[in-house]
Image (cartoon, rainbow over all chains, first blue to last red):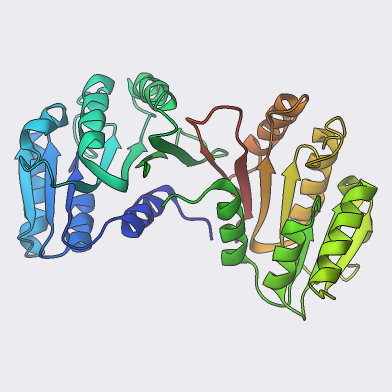
Length: 190
Length: 190
């Protein structure tokens, strides 16, 4: 069976993230991906979970408390400022990252991720990403402003150096209502 | 590591084809996919390998003889006529199929697959494909005529019913020189 988009996002992270690594949930939203990443890196790992919205931080806090997770740092800030919160030790790399682009489900649809901050966060993470590590973008684009963000993100990643990065697009193309698709950026060995 | 396009095509077939099934190589070319499918379905399975070019049939025959394969039928005909060569028993389904769209490597670049025959072959195979089975198209489109075929095929598959089929596109989008990408069509359970 072909994997659905969300399953495929998790599959790619399972294949590339190791126990004990530090990883990033750039848009923690309802906390599902944060919990997934927490399990993936295990007790010796660390999840940095960002969201600009108070509601997302509260929801994610509930999820991690409910599951007794002690390896998550919740950061109530835009992912545009991600660099300030990254490990100061330059030798420490990031094992992987995930972004859900769009709005917070069951919340104000006018509060959406913006291409400028998303691109800045991506570029900052790429600098510290481990070799063969992945940044996964799950691109929701059916909402107002979604098309513009999708186009800006695609334009940006299309021009990433093919020597340095492999940029994969994965999505179902015969579905109605603008279903989400995945962009996965791999930092190549050089 | 993200799987390259050809590896991913084989991975999808490995995940969906079972031993003993009948499968189709719609464009046997140099015989690589035919050999792969022959291994995949095993001695009790059957590979129907088509090509309109004599050279492709000869090359593939050499490959299967070299590897001692007895489960391959080579059919020197356009895949547009695929229906004539399918099993007559209506209960017998096809386990999967692969197409390489473009020209035969190391051969006349003017002899290329054409969208009309490719679409006819796809539609004929979809009728007899097993539930959850896949047709994989590896779309080479950098040659003369390639862009037109790519666009015609995409237009066709975009309109396949999303209840009946899931159409996945998988490809690297930051590479130069029009690299091939994959379209995978899954026949959904209904």
